Length: 575
Image (cartoon, rainbow, N blue to C red; front, side):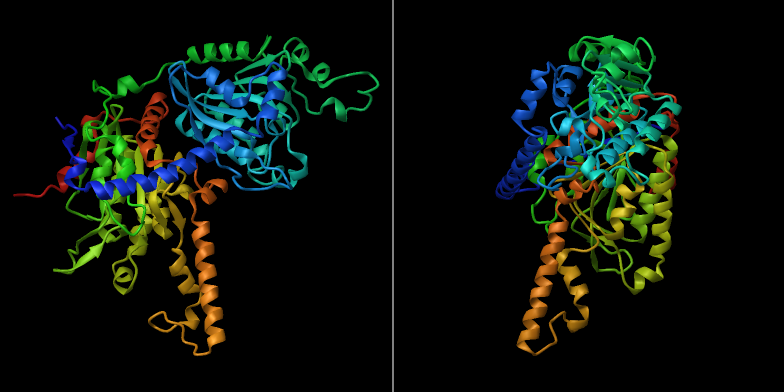
């Protein structure tokens, strides 16, 4: 009988990293984590205490307070797309988190996706990027078949910026298509309507399987301000589309409740009626366990300088249960590490970039740098990706990559073809894939290792992550290449021209370095969430449980009959 041959990996931290280096790494990470914490706090405060007070005076909760009341006690809320619109101004205004909270929330023992309008930011209006953020959260739920909970308190589009959120393929109307696709796939959708629900905000809850309305809520295509004669008739939006209308007359809502807390209790009760998680079944008798090598040490394992290396096996040892791992094809394509470990007792496949240098098997006595994709490594991760997809094993891609090998020999060896094979594999996989940008995410290597364009369910970026085609200095050299000699030195002898070229190269490098900030990526939704390295294990626990929660919508093979066993058997070294 085939079994998954998990073996112990990793060493105590003192065995591979001296205390001084570890301490420097920790201190550098503390500063980055402090910035992350401060910025999260700023986003979560919305438009500030004055606006929270306004909400409370109406007898209502804020969006994040509703989520706290809804979630299971003692569990963590995993927000995604927290920094959408970070640093972006709309006139004098900001839209923290694009005016909507999207988060994985455990409710009644089940993971759900909660989408909650932030009623402290322009009454929950939809800003530029709000629709895209809602749609991305809906897509995550659809891919994992997680119930969706809408906490609606939305006064419609923020009209001064309507041209940036109304039209286009991912404009506000696409939210309702996603509602429909979720419904067609049988994904439960439950809506609580807590206040304003105007125009598009009125459409969002309607396709849900259950709709609860508080006494302060109304759903209208157009509010009283736009209806002729409403003022003279002394009509309010509540009169036009409140619970009296939509619960008792139109039947567009199901239940009328007095307040926020009553609605949240009924939403929990509906979630409790759904099938419970399949995780216990798919653990195959195993118990969830922490890594034997402490996950908290990840904070000090990564050098702040991206040019310095670390041991990727030690990272894996601090992510998988009991630090047990089955590495496949360890002697081929050694720049890449592929294998299987458990996370919270559930099998997950891992692909990671080895760091440092390795022997070059094609040129005896020579070394080659890791963090680059070569022919064998590409073939290895492509075969592993297909096997995990066939077996139903969710995949985690741990990226720290500078790109593909380049040059005459790389082209002769057909890296374009091997790379295309890998891209095809990742493009057609149906198994849940999750991508983590540990540090570098450069060039086509970012694409090949299931970067966001290849639609992982979630892409995380650590606070160390740098997304780019080229590093700033390299790009500056490329941009001014015609002005440089073969040693990349400025050719001109004219002092004024030399100074102009030097300034241009400095400005280009600085601009590109700024563009590589993970906050810039998060603001543009080029990554789904920013995390500390110390948070990686809890996020992987979420990914594992969310992948195995729903049953019957994808193939999950018994581990005795995995294709991965065949792959291992055919590549065993014979004595």
